[in-house]
Length: 172
Image 1 (cartoon, one colour):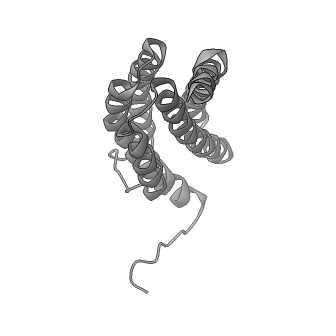
Image 2 (cartoon, one colour; image 1 turned 180 degrees about the horizontal axis):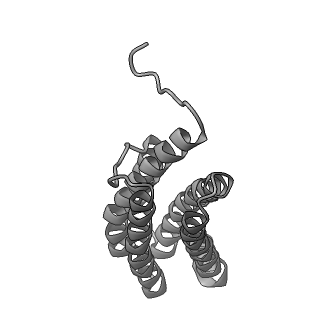
Image 3 (cartoon, one colour; image 1 turned 30 degrees about the vertical axis):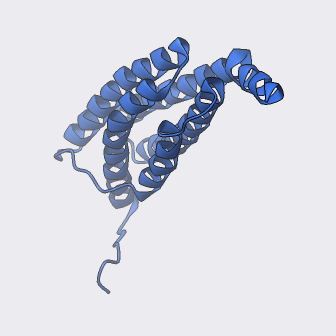
């Protein structure tokens, strides 16, 4: 059947998922500057810029994983991330109360972080099962960074941005 993926074993699935992750990290590299520019809070802008630097490192880690498998780093279009970023782009283009727009950007970014955490957790587990311990450590580093980014976004939201958005709503 045309277009049907053939998954012969866990290694095949692992490589396929690595290609997906490599693609979504590139998609995120393109999206983060737009999100930073759209953000009004200087702390949120800084968080997006910092996460872009982390994302560059995550791309390099994935390239290391591919090399250790004896493969060229390769991308397979990640449709899931494409959809998440497309939804987030609506918030990048949104107008209105600054804090509310920032709250929306945080929401979009956290959806992306949760998707990444799910993928990196799965990839790390596959690497462990396949005996690729060095790869598992690299993937775990990226998972830790995604988790920390999610926590930072939660802190920004709960320590001020969401409260400011609530205040703006009450004032109208």
